[in-house]
Image (cartoon, rainbow, N blue to C red; front, top):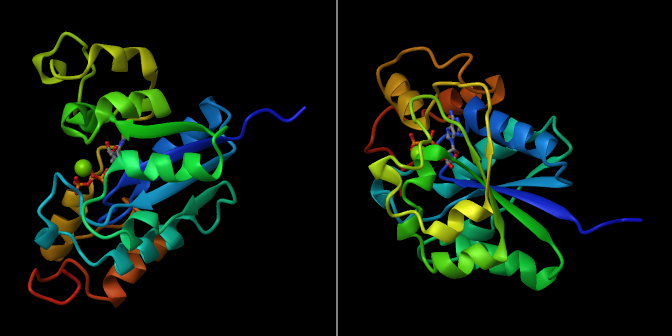
Length: 211
Ligand code: ATP
Ligand code: MG
C-alpha cells in the first residue's frame, strides 16, 4: 500500500552549490526514506544582499549540473520565477496546494536554524511541514545556547536532528577562493567547477553575472 508521498526540500542561495548541500540532501533522504529531494534556489534571499548574489540563471544551472547523476534529486525554479523575496512559507504552500497530503521535510543546516524566528509566518510554517536540521562543521547545536534563544519552543518538537559528516565547505569560501585565483577542486562537483571557470563567475563583482 502506497503511503503519503514524502518530499525533502533544500532551500538556499546555492551561490554556488557544493558538496555540503549535496551530502545534506543525500543523508536526509536516506535517513528519513524521502521519495524525492528538491533543491530550490532562492531568488532574493531575505537575509542576503541581493547585489552580492549572482544571477539566478547561473545558480539554477549549477544545481542542475550538480544533481544530474542522482535520479532522486531535482531542482525547481519556483522561487526564481516568483518576483520579490523568496519566503519558504510561500514555497511550502505551493507544494501543498498541488498535493495536500504531501509529507514535506524542510532540510537546513544548524546555521539556518539560528535565524528561523526571522522567517515569514514561522508559526504557521511549523504547522505545514517538518524540519530536518543537519549538523554543520563550525556550528554547535546546543539548545540552551543564546544563539537559539529566539527559536520558537514549538519548533523544537517539529525538528529531527541528523548528524552528517562535517564538511567545512561554504559557498562564500568557494567565491573567495575563486576571486583569489585559488583551487576549488574537491569542494564541489567537477561539472560545477568547470561551469564557474567557463563563465568567469566570482572573479569580479562588477561583471554581469551579478544582478
Ligand atoms: P554562503 O556561504 O553564501 O552563505 P552556504 O554554503 O551557507 O553559502 P547556503 O546556500 O547559504 O550555502 O545554504 C543553504 C542550506 O544548506 C542552509 O540550510 C545551510 O545551513 C546548508 N548548508 C550549506 N553548507 C552546508 C554544509 N557544509 N554542511 C551542512 N549544511 C550546509
Ligand atoms: Mg549560508
